[in-house]
Each structure stands twice: as C-alpha cells, then as structure tokens.
Amino acid sequence: MTTDSAIPDSFSVSCIVRGALLTPLPGAGDAVRWEPDGALAIGSDGRILASGSANEILGRFPGAAVDDFSGRLILPAFVDAHLHFPQLDIIGSLGDSLLEWLENSALPAELRMTDSRYTEIAAHILIQTLLTHGIATAVIYSSSHTDATRTLFAEAERSGMRALIGKVSMDRHAPAALLSDADRDVEQTARLIEKWHQRTPLLHYVVTPRFAPCCSDELLRGCGEWLRSHPDLRLQTHFAETRAECDWVRELFPHDRDYLAVYERCGLLGPRTILGHAIQIDAAIAERIAESGAAVAHCPSSNLFLGSGLIPLELLEKFNVRVGLGSDIGAGTSVSMWRTMLAAYQVQRLRGRALSPGRLLKMATWQGARALGLEQETGALIPGLFADFQVIDWQRHPLLKRRMEQGAVDADAVISALIAHADDRVTEEVRVLNRPIWQQPVNG
Ligand code: GUN
Ligand code: ZN
Image 1 (tube, helix red, strand yellow):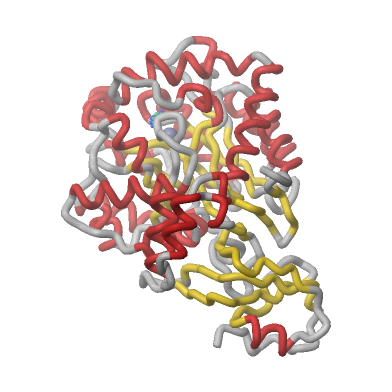
Image 2 (spheres, rainbow, N blue to C red):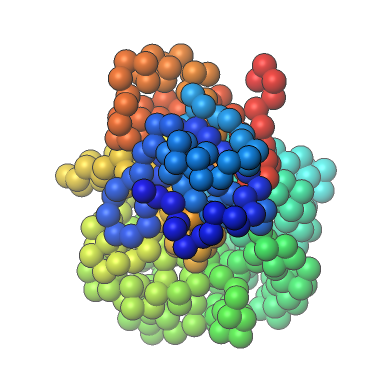
C-alpha cells in the first residue's frame, strides 16, 4: 500500500496518471517500488497525493480524469547535478587530461559565449536536449558572462524545467576575456541574483567559483560571503578531480593544509554547497566534507574520459555525504543519465564493487534531488513530492523492446535493460509539477 492515508479521499485530485511505475524510495537502501500497472493521484498544485496500483487509485478517486500511459514506464524525471552550458559543442574533445583539456578545449569554447546569436541557439539546444533525455532538474555552470547566463536562465524559464544556474566566477589562470576581478564579480552576481534567483519556484541562482586555481583568495571569500549572507543560495565548485590539480592548489595556497582547507577558510563549504568530482580524497577528507554538510556531484563519464580517476564512493557513503550524479558535459561524454549510470557502474566495477540497479536509478533521481536540497520537491514518485516524471515508451527502441518482451519483468531487470539501451528515442513525455514540458513529436 503506497497511498498516503493522511490525505482525505475528497481532496481535490486534478488527475490520475496511469502506467508502469518505477521509483526509488527515500532513505538509505537501494529499494525501488515497481507497480507494473500503477497510478499516481495528483493534486491541482502538481503534488502527488497518492500512489499505488491502478485498481487501488482508480477505486479511491472515481471520476478523476485519467492520463493513460498503460504499456509505458513512468519514472521520476532525472536530476543532472553538474554540467557546463558553454561546453555543449566540445563534447568528445580527445587527447588531454583535465588541465590541458581546460586550456585547449574548455576555456576556448567559453570565449565564444559573447556571441549572442550563438548563445541563444546553444541555450535552446541544450535545454531541449536535457528534456529529450528525461532530465527535468539540472545544475548548470554557465560561462563567466552575465549575458550568456541571462540567456540560459530565460531559456530555462520558458521550458518549465527546474534549473539551478550560475555565472562562472574566476579572476586568474584563464584568458583575460573570461576574468572579472572580485569587485566586478560581486556586482555581476548581484544583478543576476536580483533578476533570476527564485524568479519562479523552479529557478535558482548558484554561486559558481570555477575552482581554486582560477580564483584568488579575495574572489573565493567573496563567494563564501554570498553563501553566508543569503540562506537560500547554493554554491558549486570543482574539487579534487585530478592529482595535478591538487598539486597546483598546494603551490597556489601554500599556507593552507590542503585543498579542502582553502574552501573551508573562504567559507565555501556548507549544506548548500555542491562539490564537483571529489575523487582525490581519503577518509579524513570525506569526513570533513560530511561535517561541513556539503554534497558531491559524481561525474563518472567525465572522470573516465579525462582519465581523472575512480571516485572512492564507499568513503563518501561511509560518512553519509550526499552524492548526486552529473553528466559534466563537455568533459562528460553523454547528456544521457542512462549512460551516466552505466559509467558510474563501470567506475565502481574497476574498484571491485557492483552498484545495484536500484542504487544507480536512485543516484540519477532522488539522490540528486537530495544533494541539491530539493528532496521535498522532486526525485521520487511518492506522496508529498511534485509530479516531476518522465514517460518511457520502450517499444520505440528495437533492442530494448526485445529485452522487455523477453522477460524484463522485475525492477532490476527493467533498470538494467534501460541502462544498456535507453536513449532519447524512448522519452515520450516529461512533466514538471504534472505540466507537460516536453513531448515526443508525433511520428518522432
Ligand atoms: N575543473 C575546473 N573547471 C572544470 C571544467 O570545466 N570541467 C571539469 N571537468 N573540471 C573542471
Ligand atoms: Zn565540471
């Protein structure tokens, strides 16, 4: 029984959504709920009021309109906890490890973001690409330009998705056209926050110092000050992705005991902080991350592509650090969270572990929401959360169809088949607050 019995049956149900429900469950375990003929009762505010078998829900709310997705899967929409807007067109730039790749590929790409026609088209394509892949919540590094960041916010607002976006702050070790000194950065950030932060309940500004090597002490402290003075702002940065990066931080900040200490001293760490990568860590660092309350965005396809390293996920789990999953395009090789889950699985295989299908799905949905502090809103199809979901028509993919018809009948088998085969072809519809924000074109 998955219905929330606290909700009176007479409560205004605006619609029932019927289909094969597959959702992770909050809490520590890997368990998922699988209802092959399931239904959600959804209120007029877009929140899920009840979930269960179709029989149970249809019987309990007679007369409610039914959106019938029978024969299709209904899953929580994905949460991509880390990606880069300006890197859309450099995915798959082969040949370099992190610091060289930044110099040769990523930073040159960011120089293009002053061209308003280019950024408008890129923002549109990026957001549509996220939606076609079932991603309805994304945490996005823009470039260091206010105009490009505005363009991205405007596109995200038009789309109806949940978007957490930040202008990248940096004042050294990048081309001069990408730098702002600490004072100018404060002004630019203030203007963006004023215009876009919580302009709708779906939009959030994220303070975004790129990483310690591109930021002076003063700039980092300025970013920490935003976090301290605005209790509803989040902060994202990169941390301990490669050994060479860690060595560079040691050279640049000789008075700090280690990389994390730089962020601690500058006030960058807290429960609203999302650290990208966190690969080069030991138990003591994992424990300090946990004590600060910061979350980690694990970006496995990026880590494999750049050869950055294999994250010791068990250390983060040991200390209960919240961990979401990020595509990290353009170092990441695919926008798809299915491919990102596959990469997460492969990374842990190389460390001698096997993540369960339920764990992988949870990382791409509810754990992501939790890492962003949005676990009361999105990430699972359970009463009380908003109806942010994706409808998957597995028949649109020949191999997936064969696999499902050959007996993918339990949750683990279905998730495994999806991780192997699902792509944007199979996304039929994406909803946020039960509002359709993307639909597969007819004959698409
Ligand atoms: N570290 C600093 N900047 C970046 C970036 O753009 N991508 C990745 N993967 N790591 C970074
Ligand atoms: Zn990144």
